[in-house]
Amino acid sequence: MTKIIQKAEQISPLQKARSEYEPKLPASLKQGINNLKIMEGETTSAAGDAEEIKNMFSNLFGAKIVTFEPGTEAAAEKTINVGVILSGGQAPGGHNVIAGLYDAIKETNTENRLLGFLGGPAGIIDGQYREIEGDYIDQFRNTGGFDIIGSGRTKLESEEQFEKTLQTCKNLEVSAIVIIGGDDSNTNAAMLAEFFRKKGENIQVIGVPKTIDGDLKNEQIEISFGFDTATKVYSELIGNIQRDANSAKKYWHFIKLMGRSASHIALECALKTQPNITLVSEEVKAKNMSLARIIDYMADIIARRAENGKNFGIVLIPEGLVEFIPEMKELISNLNDQLAECENKEEYSSMHGWDTKIAYIKGLLKSENSNLFNLLPKSIQIQLLLDRDPHGNVQVSKIETEKLLTEMLEVKLSEMKKNNEYKGKFSTQTHFFGYEGRCAAPSNFDADYCYSLGYNAFALVRFGLSGYISSVRNLTKPAQDWIAGGIPLTSMMNMEKRHGKQKPVIKKALVEIDGAPFEKFSKNRETWAMEDCYVYPGPIQYFGPSQVADVTTETLKLERA
Ligand code: FBP
Image (cartoon, rainbow, N blue to C red; front, side, top):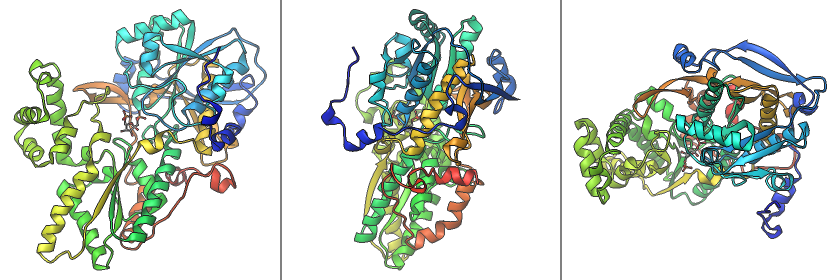
């Protein structure tokens, strides 16, 4: 008996109406999963370090890009059990990926089963799952969140974990696994696919590109799902704050935006809302901008606006900024090395209180890093010492860069005041938008895109592929013109240093400062800084004319123009 998790009184009128929304599929998939033919495209290599990737993935390397086209009706096949995993941070549309997958699986054969592994990759290692059935999936169609089966950040990478995964698959007769995740999780998907191939096990692994951060993209993967909805939610909130600032005219609002290393979210929101200042981490790196130079840049705008009688404004800050400021980057890398060593030291793990830990770590740092560490507020020192995530990344969502910048600006502006270079009033509010958008109900774009990705993932399974990521392209066109297919995961990989070791990983796509989205921002930023050109995008529209309800991101439009 399926457990119904939402009672009628918990379902909002919007959720009810949205549950009736029928996601659009590309024309190639619309004729049904049983009417497809597969077209082989070019042979692939790797995004970098091809020789090493080839050695590590000798069974998967060099596969061909594939696309699907309508074909003749296929004969019914033997039944299949498919497992699905949601991995990493939540992103709007995950439920629709599972809905698309479920519908394709059942269309092929009603006896086929879909098993959802619970709480992320840990679910398949420990054999924890629930079967996804019709009335259960129906509650989640077009909703946000990952609560259908939960998510987790366990890194599926060791031989022991792979063996346990294999055992789970054998116990449950699962012969295909769909991993819905970001760059790290899709790297793991490739490793698992290679492991099964090497062992001669007939278990397929297919990835799906998820992350609000927007950094899992390339020529074939135009956008990761969730980016569209999340940036629309943040832009609504930024627009509301801009209106507030423009009404009261008394605060500078500093808004940090999620996105980990990449500034795609900050840039997309800037293009949508036109705030006074937007920092872009990739530009900071390219121009080798020190913390002092960033502060000077912002202080100059604040002072010039004050001269025009404007003691208010909006600043957008990408979450990963600190990792791109050269001296902070060095400090973080030195801290990573020292903390990795401390992990095994009883002496460090048994220490109580942050003061003791901070003093101990300071003593281990190189002198230039230690000097900078000393200058940081204690709150930031603590945030820099917090545990790394399972992939070895600093948890940038926990570093309050927005507060670091306002504190430093207060000092800078009061110095400028003494020198008669600034006559304004600097009153601030800080915000961090991340969790506010990650589980929003998917926009029409994400609802359609995710459903198509899930449906398409099963088409890849159906044609016997493994080590592929589900790809739906041509996304600035109406859904019927989208191109569905698969990309070999190894073609997106290169070698990078993680936890002090060279590892194969899917290359992260950061903002290109010679790309069209950054260029548009850069051309306009001086005007946006001084004049108030705020745009108030308002909430996501789920119903109404296509040019309002179905539009996708500025980034995608500019990149594909
Ligand atoms: P993924 O890369 O797993 O999609 O996660 C995205 C993200 O929302 C980042 O933007 C953010 O830095 C991080 O997750 C926060 O992690 P957590 O959910 O563990 O707090």
